[in-house]
Length: 290
Image (cartoon, rainbow, N blue to C red; front, side, top):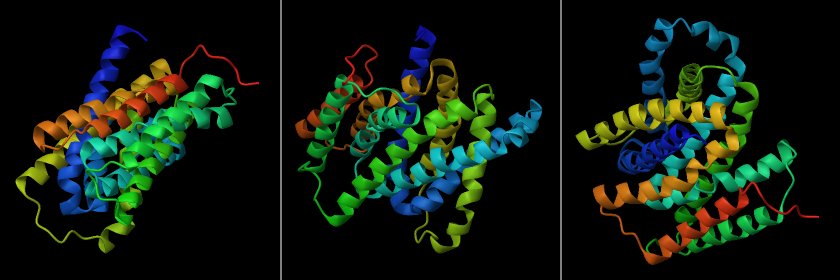
């Protein structure tokens, strides 16, 4: 990748690392559904006037079906799953589960894009999921049924991201990043509307919650997804997904600084194995499994 692409990848990791902090603050108060509805609706409404100003609305109409699919697969479902996980899990912990995205991405690529499964990728799978197993046994969290359901939700969100990345590459290449970001967020907001009456928040949000929602929409959605879709188009879906390697580091940093969340040696070990496994699984030079 170019230096500019690498810098954008680092910035994206910092922004998405912050999203786990914002969700950890706001999700217990607003609930996952209303939090994500605010996130995607605010993001879409902020970008819509810019889109109209640049006379790009016809691009949304031209690509409406893939934009709806991306809004569902890459925003509505994974956002909800991660927000649900954030109610029970620390920000850094949830982000490490999200770091399995490139592992799932490699599996999806082998099935969908017919990429060959290699020895190094199998080693990466083993190391990565060993890291997840270690995280599941993390002593700082009580292993209740809710805890394990939250872990499953985080892993399912990672799977959705892995499925949507090649779809974006195949169906929205050449479409401006602003169009993809705006269209996908507005479609996600529309898809979540029917669920809102059944999940009304029971608490009045504090100023910290309100600021977290705004930051989640502006920084971790508008700006972050603009960078993400640019990276997918510039360097490809596989390399863009490697942002998941770096997100846990920033998420643990923000969680430790703002929420004083503990960073244990077990957590660091699990994180290290997940990152090492994903890195090995996506090595370009490897031996093909016969």
